[in-house]
Image (cartoon, rainbow, N blue to C red; front, top):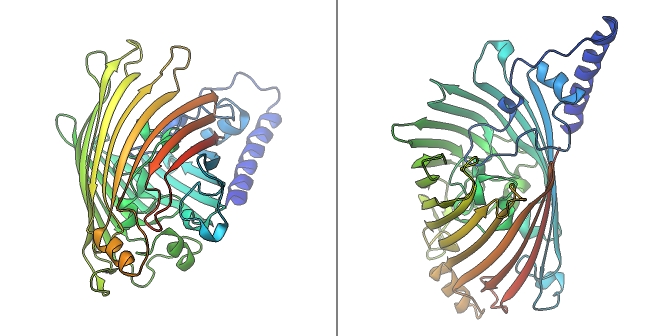
Length: 435
C-alpha cells in the first residue's frame, strides 16, 4: 500500500516538475488555493501534529505538488522500549506483562488523504491508511501488516454535523484517551483497555463503521457510531481471522453501538479549556460468560471523563497551562477480565517557557479485575491479583519538527491478573516521527 502511494506521488511530482520545465524558467509560485491542514486527520477526538510539524518541509516540491492536486501523504513511525527496573528478566515462556522481560515494539503508519474538490465536494475528505505493527511479545501485539483506514469524511452546515463512513479505528474518534488530546503525547501515560475489550476498533486494527457527530448549542455535542465488533478474543484473534483488515464481517462478529455526549469548550483569553464526555458501548456479539461457560450477548462498557484547565500560563496561547482530569469506566464482570477503571491525572502543556510543545504528566490509575474471573483462577489453584494500581510520571519532548520523545516511569502494584508476580517499576521510552 505504501509503495503504491509513493509511486502515485512520485508521478504527480514528476508531472508537476515536467510542466514547469516545458514552460521555461519558473516564475514565483502561486500560493495554494487551500490549506494543507485541511488534509490532516479530521473528525477525531485526538489530533495529529500539523504538517508544519514534520520531517518533510511543508513548502517542499513534494508537499506542494500534492497539495495542488488536493492530496497529501504522510508517514508516522515509532519505536517503544519498556523494562522493569526492580527485577531481572524472566524467560519468555514465563512473561505475563509488558516489561517483565525487555520489551520492544515498532510501527509504521502511511496515510494518504484527498480533499475531493474535484468531485465538487466541500469539507470532505477521502482517507486511506495502512499499518505495520511489530512487537517482541505476542500478547502485547498484534503483529500485523494491514489496512488501518479506508473511509469518506464529510462535514455539513459549517461543520455542525460530521460524518465518517468506512473502515475506521475508533480509538481516535471516541472517549479521548490521549493525554492532552494529541497522538504525539498519548503514549506517555496509561489508559484503560475496557473499551477495546468490549470490541471497539483501535490501532492497528480497523473495522467498518458509520460515525456521526452533531454539535449542539452551548458547546455541547453528541456523536454515535455503528461499528462491526472486533473479535471477542481480542486484537491478536482479530488479526488471525482477518489478516488484511479488509474482511467486512467475519463470522460471529455483530454490531457494536457507541453513544457519547459531552461538553467541550476551547481555551480562550477569557475561558479555560473544559471537556466533559460520557458514553456507552453496547455489543450484540456473543462473548464467553465465565460464570456459566456459555456464550452471552449484550456486553457493554460505560464511561465518563473530565479534563479542565486549572491555570493558563501564556496569554497569547491560552491552551498552554496546567490541567487536571479523571476517568471512570465499568464493564460486566461475567464477560470481561478487566471490569473497572479509575484514573486521575495532572498534566502541564508547555511546562517551560523555552519548551512550548512539551507535556509533563503525572497519572494514577486503578484497574479492578473481575471477581468471577479471578475466583475461577483461584479454584484452579492459581495465584491472582484482584486489582492493579499504577502511578506514572511522564515527559513528552518535541525534540525537533516531527520528532517526539516520550519518557516515563511507572510503578505498578499488581502488574498481571495471574500469577501473582511482584510489583514492577517500568521504565518506558517512546520515539515517534512524523514525515
